[in-house]
Length: 199
Length: 258
Image 1 (cartoon, one colour):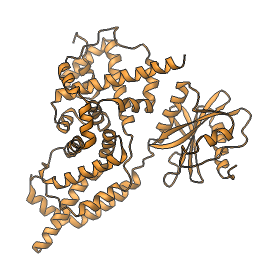
Image 2 (cartoon, rainbow over the protein chains, first blue to last red; image 1 turned 90 degrees about the vertical axis):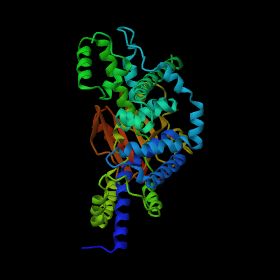
Image 3 (cartoon, each protein chain N blue to C red; image 1 turned 60 degrees about the vertical axis):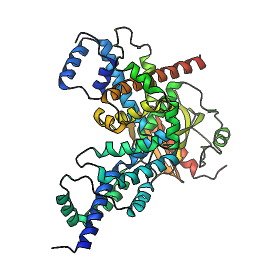
């Protein structure tokens, strides 16, 4: 059945809208979770998600079909955050990039016997303590936090993380490595502090 | 591979990012290197822990609806064409069906997506952390008239504590803590030589998400819902004793506030 032009247009519009919502709405919990981690405030997180959603909706024409929609919309969220007041403030306080570049991929190998295995049982207990892990995550610099949120929480592949963060894949690798090392150090310090407070 | 695995290689291994050849070489090295095996395990453990702790914030229930309302005013441009004309024709034919399907999916996903899904895991983590920390509770008292008022202004709800307890059950104190980003009361009891935590929080959803008689990581879990409260008790004590404590707390909620 041939459709009248105005009816065809209206149906096309409904189909496109549904296409965007089909892709975007299932990602809402993940977008909100990441936004809340970045902004550290529920109201700011909601604003960030709303702005991201509307920007993505308007820019849906720029999304190349067949590419990774999740990486695309997460990149919009992250860029929106970086240009927000809280994002700019966070970026100003982090001078990590140069440090990371200097360190590059030259993270040392672990010689036998040097690895910190002094308190594996305490480490295991600490890893079971979600609150302690979340506290440690809160203290991570933003470039390290966002990379492990995308890698571990969102289970994104390195190449998609690189697309989202607009950084080389080598930088993703070194940040993941550094983030986990920093987390481990913070959790171990946490344990030491607990032991010192309570002899 | 004679050298030890680098930190980056160990993390790529944990993240499943090594090529088949690299993976084979890494596995061969790990077979003969306890230090790298230990470190590989630590990286995997850290990844799993972060994944669990990172799912922290629950999207507000009405946000999707608000976004949909706002997006109605904006007609989205179509995505960059791969086979745009074919896609348009397909969408034109199925537009109405798609809208209905989307509405059904949204309704269904609201029902299915249960923010309390990992509740038992979280409760178990909290209880283990309490046992492992070996620290006194935030309020240390066996007196219910001390413990209950301590929560005033800290929780958006009130609760009752049982006036009498079995002979070997003692209230040790309580903590203010958080489950699923909500403030909850964690009551700590000793039952003989065992310790039990009872978490009380505002009623959430149609029923208490914890099923009766649940076991998790070797702990027994008992749950109840009453008077606008959900309660979850966890301990390694005999499940009958734990149920008894949960029943006492449940009954206490229906007695007038002292």
